[in-house]
Image 1 (cartoon, helix red, strand yellow):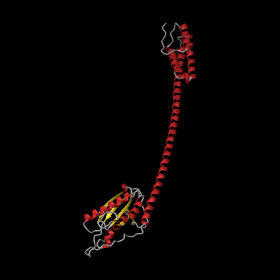
Image 2 (tube, one colour; image 1 turned 135 degrees about the vertical axis):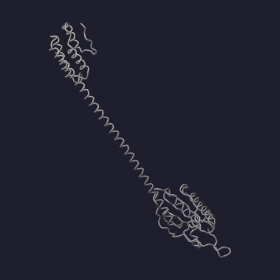
Image 3 (cartoon, rainbow, N blue to C red; image 1 turned 120 degrees about the vertical axis):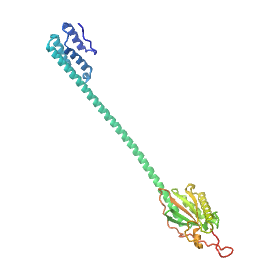
Image 4 (cartoon, rainbow, N blue to C red; image 1 turned 45 degrees about the vertical axis):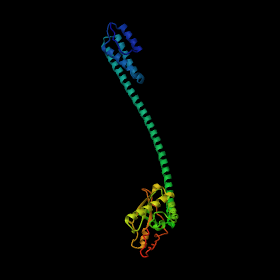
Length: 326
């Protein structure tokens, strides 16, 4: 007699049944239904049902045992085939229930892992938010500190301009282009010269002291002349005077990167050049302090000097026409 070969191992109980079958039923081969029932049980036992659905696997084993006994009692009977068919279906049901239980177990495990991962991500997000909040607090504190320092610097700058406006160093006015400090040319220079007079140094020292605290501002020194002489010579003279005033202020503490000089010549008069008083007013140096972009504008107190002091021209050696007292 030839036995059917199975690729998967039999259980100890099944091997015992098979041995009994070989001994008692050697004359009649098992029906196909019984062979299918044996294979179905082996598959169910090898799957997750043995761990997750042992009750269903036990029912499948009971059904297979009944089919084996029916075969032992009456190998070729219809009852044997029916019992074997029932055993096949019972084993298949156990296999399906085991697979379903395994799928549910995997699903629950994945859900737990996802929940754990979500919690971990939430924890990291909270840590990131806390860190961002700390950085924001630090930035706010830094900005508050910088604002306090800026306000203190603005206060010092305004006080310096106010002190200058209260002194006799020059006229201080607020215009659209900024704070304008005007010093008469006759106070600063000899006629037709660009060298700063020794007597003007006290006034320029006061101006330099005020301009030291203007870090948020730009400073322009403008030289102006009257209309006596040629336009080219007046422009050259005004540039030289503006440059020398600028250099003097830098030498006395005004940051060089904040201040520049420009000669205007006779092109921007503030009075009539036909009379000596008007020409004296036109001969001047203006120092314009304008805020940089985003910086506040300084509003100085009214100056004690409403207008530059007019300077009389010296008579010419011939006695009649006034000299060019640029």
